[in-house]
Length: 291
Image (cartoon, rainbow, N blue to C red):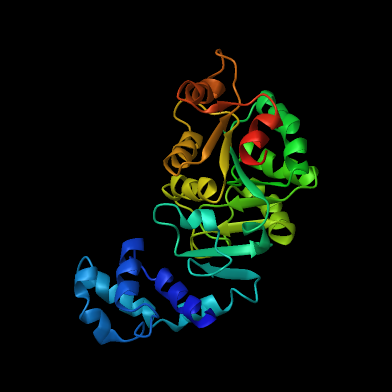
C-alpha cells in the first residue's frame, strides 16, 4: 500500500489534476501500474482539458523534484493517508467527493478513536462565545469527545485551546498545506497540535493557502464529525457552510443561541429557526451523540 500511496500522492501533486481526473485514471488503472507510462495518457487524452494540460501533467509525473519532495514527508513526520487505507476516517468516506489523500501530522489514531464533534464559529469571537466554549467543553471532554475545528482565528482557536486545557484531544483541519499554517498567530498552537494532537490537510504540504480552499476544507471538518456545533456566526458566515455540509451528509447540527441584538448570533439564531438543535448544556449534545 505504501508504494501505491506514493504513486497516488505523486499524481495528486500534478498541476491541473482534479478529483474527477484521478477517479477516471483509477478506473482505467486501479493499481496505478501505468502511472509513468506516457502512452497510457496519450490514449486517455479525453481526460484532459487540452494538450497543455496533458503536457503539464506528464512534466510533473517525470519530475524528480516532486518525487524527492514526497519522500521527505515521512522523515518530517507527515503521513500520507489515502482513501483506501484503514486509517482513513470512515465518516469522511461517506461524504461527496472525499479527499483522495489526507496529509497528516500528529496522532493519526485520533482519526479512528473517540466521538468527533466539529466546533466552528466567528473569527471575531466575543466574550460570550468564549464563555460558551468554556462552559460546554469540560463535560464533552469527560465523555471522550474529540474536538474538530479549522485552526482559524476566533472560535476555532479557542475551541482547540480549550480542548487541550481540559485534557482532551483535538484535530485541526487547515486550508493550504502543513508547511504553511494560516493565520501566523496560530502557528504555535498548530505546532503543539502536531506534536500531541493532529493537524491534517487535503493539500500537499507545500501548498500556500488560497481563499477558495477555506470553504472547501469545511466539508472535511463536518465530514469526519458525528455532529457540528456552531458557537457564533453572522448571517453570511463561513461557519454556515460547515453547517450546510453537515445537513447534506445527514449529521447533527447544534447551535448556541445568542442575543437578537448581536450580529455575531444572527447566523446561529437563523440555524435554530431552520431546525438546528438549540444547545444550553453539554447534555444537549451528548444525548444525540452518545446517550
